[in-house]
View 1 (spheres, rainbow, N blue to C red):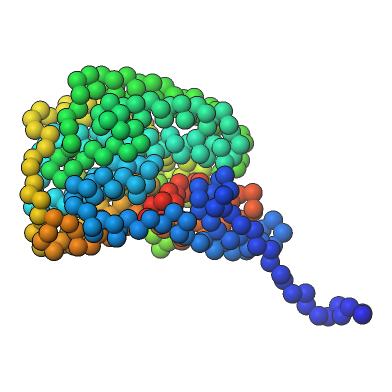
View 2: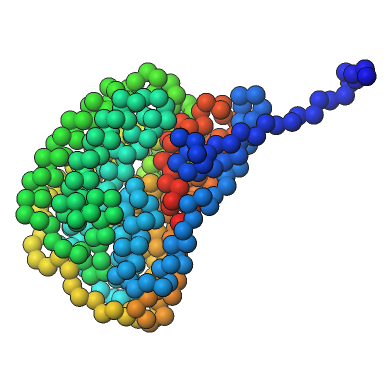
Length: 370
């Protein structure tokens, strides 16, 4: 059969699976449509980590939910606890004592550092920098031990409760934490030379996965992904809560909007969190660390947002006057990272850049699926 040169060739795309078993996907699955080495389209398929947490919260008391919300994102449980207990307190019309607010902020900032250091390990593994990953995971252990000292739990602290915190900080915690912060501050120089200024890392991240501020806002980006586009948006500054009105810190921003800008924002946030923690640890108020709250909350609804490591984390709760919430809706930052930002940035990229773009967004698939 003779070929017809005038007949246009029909493009037949090749579908390449990204996850959920891919080591650089974090249990996320996306169907990547490629033309040669170029990504034509990426279609996300959420649900591999769906646990129905919002529905489960309707059948548990407010104290029990304080434990459950840790499971929303195992990489950063304190922010989820912060969001949940504050929305309960808004409905109940109570306010945690000043010491409790400081303790919550201390643990939340330790959680931010923990999340960012874990991310350093994951992105290093995704790009083949095994030494950086092993060092970062070792540094992560130091913060997990502080979690254990303060709360009794390493991964799931279950520490914040409506009205305050479950128990006071133990004697010597401040000194141990300041010692760990001095160590982490010195480690930033090692991360710079080994990872962030590594020629391979810079080449893989620079000029990849670019969007501007207008596009980022339209896609629902928050946190370092939005600040990497030059937008100085941070709930801790815009709507201060807990002990954040008492501390000074910079909101880290970059202008290029590429993967490397998002990297540098997170690197800078580690240093700023260290500064916040030093301020709080050296001036922690005395007094009560919790107040009693009645088991039932009045009828009504409330909304509360906090600044998690990945961006805005918001809780909307409706109360029907019982000891359990009638409805809880969680707006986690990773929802837009994985379902809108990632497909947008992947389009037109090279296959080899997909892991770099994905982890530059620092998604938490359990938060997306819940």
